[in-house]
Image 1 (tube, rainbow, N blue to C red):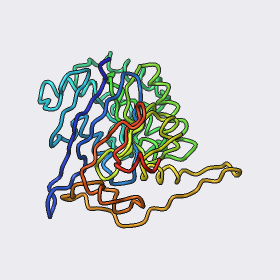
Image 2 (cartoon, rainbow, N blue to C red):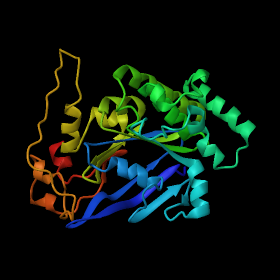
Image 3 (tube, rainbow, N blue to C red):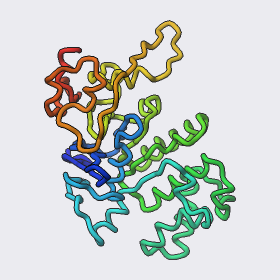
Image 4 (spheres, rainbow, N blue to C red):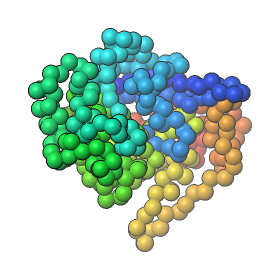
Length: 315
């Protein structure tokens, strides 16, 4: 079966003082139709840059991007406009990502105007999207500052779905919301995915959230994937030392089985002109000279990939 979205050896470098910052470095994975790929990691690991590069908000430095088997890596002009209908994004901050001078119905309808919708059908489509995403009809003439964070994010979701995309990047869409509102927005996203058979990439640093919504999880560290597996398998048997430390930080309410925290010591490696080898080695308690060699994702268990030469030995 051809995956909905596939990236092969994707790279995104930025020129900075001192060299090249490797924000995304040789990342490969695929997402099947109607499923959600969670991408997790600490701040600055490159997960948001990865999502924006896939949908061409940032142009890749190297590698390939496929949508339904079609190579869209170098999409330009007409092809890029067609691609915008198929690939969309929900941003992290629902206030800064929408125009404060436009009403709610204007914000949601803005993508439709660019694709030739007439006034009557545009109004009907906006009303339909507002109903789908739970935005009250009375708010159609309101402005963003009149809405709370949850409603603003619903508006952002409605705008992202306006062109009926096949693939949506959710860039930490609930991190700026209260916990009670987070649950409502997550339930909305899962309902919309089921109704529309959406394929999603869910970027987050909140592991309890990604466990709820994702079918598969990629763990990123300083621009590279260090582990990739189905969600239940990753939480049941994490292999990479970084993944173990990351998941140990998830709060637990089970008093009978308290979580044993794994503290990471050492300094972060620089993502600017990084040296070959494992980028987690400087902070890894299991690191050896072998870790100075280039590391690639290898399948250690069925469907479970890890980039660590020591993973087999320590597990």
